[in-house]
Amino acid sequence: MDNFEEYLRQGEPNKAEKAKVWKTAIGLQQVDGLRPSDYLIETARQNIEGNISIDEVKQRIDNYYQQSPVKDTKNRTEEADKVSARIAEILSEQTFTFSPAEYLAIHRRLFQNIYTNAGKIRDYNITKKEWVLNGETVLYASAESLKATLEYDFEQERKFNYKGLNQQEIIEHIAHFISYIWQIHIFGEGNTRTTAIFLIKYLRKLGFKNVSNHLFEKHSWYFRNALVRANYEDLSKGIYKTEKYLISFLSNLFFGENHLLKNREMHVQHFDTVKTQNDTVNDTVFYLIKQNNKITATEISKRLNISLSTVKRKLKKLKESGKIERIGSDKTGYWEVI
Image 1: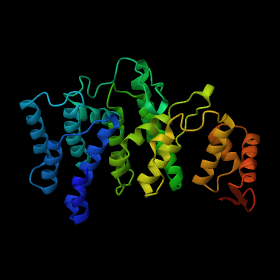
Image 2 (image 1 turned 90 degrees about the horizontal axis):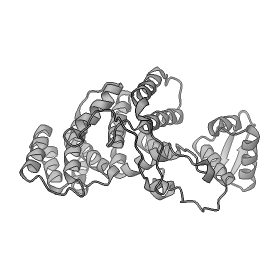
Image 3 (image 1 turned 90 degrees about the vertical axis):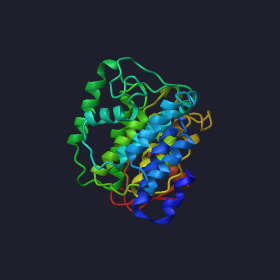
Image 4 (image 1 turned 45 degrees about the vertical axis):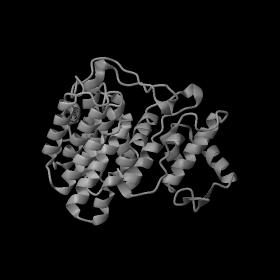
């Protein structure tokens, strides 16, 4: 990926924009552990230079694999090359419709002639072992309810009014929406890459035209793991659904914040296994305060679905440990993180 850095440094707007698109397209293959070939990198460079169009890129890649059909089936290099080119094409287009049909169309365009059911809703149930869950799986939507569930989530988002929301509230809402449609996992394969492209296009529609998509280049696997953690819970082990990792990713994406994005911190066994459920709740309360220092005990109670008395005990413990301090009154004051 360093091959494209020169175009970003040179400052030629057209080449820089193309380089950003290609870096995003290639970086997203890491979601499934795929790495494009050197041939794709060189062909992308020619497109950035303006020597060939994106259609010519796609044609060259197709010809390359037609002439030598078996390149690296184990590492799925052909898939990585073709999907990278298709992502670059979609991200270069100034078109978008907010609808389930668009979501399906993106998947079809990305994976046509790669997956047999490209653009089609799966008709079977699935499970997927996840590293971040220590081999466990998220519970995905049943095949019988996929279409109706996807349409419902889109309809709810279509009705939602962003007016009056601050930046943090916007991020939190988009995190909810995108984690919901990902959890449906409407396709057998390729859900995360499809969701990422849909999200980028949707953000443009919402007016976030200067969003730095380089995070999908560098942290696409983090994005996937964050979606997993937003949709997995095992109460018997004190593991709760949490969108905090996804919110950190989106905060960096939207507003250039600098949250550390480390995959190992999302692993369900990252914290000491002897940590109690109470410690987990303490960590979450502290996180909410760091994200919004004006959050009230009542709001925390609603967010975490725990009693107000429990929240007050957690706040007291955090104050006694010297992590936070209350400045001003309960109604008009704020939290200071020590």
